[in-house]
Image (tube, rainbow, N blue to C red; front, side, top):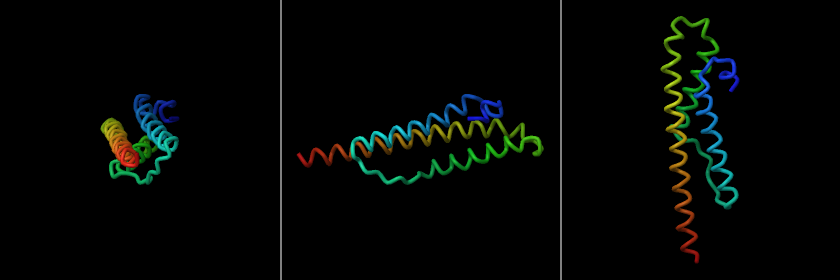
Length: 110
């Protein structure tokens, strides 16, 4: 967030990254409210997203020291955005499947 405040990264990128995390937290809150137990296992897409986010943050912070960093930033920004969105959509897909399974299990109990 502070990278966006100090204009090291675009504001829209910070919004995408933070929004994904908020959506994930809301999803877990909904599971908790409905007493649905979920294994908290990060997906491969999520792990790749974390790696590219860390690489981007490191590049942005070391920008003056790395030759050609200016040309690498924008492809990394877009990579972070795409992977973050894909990761968020993947988690939504997983959550919807868990809700469907829970609904099927609850129908079988009635």
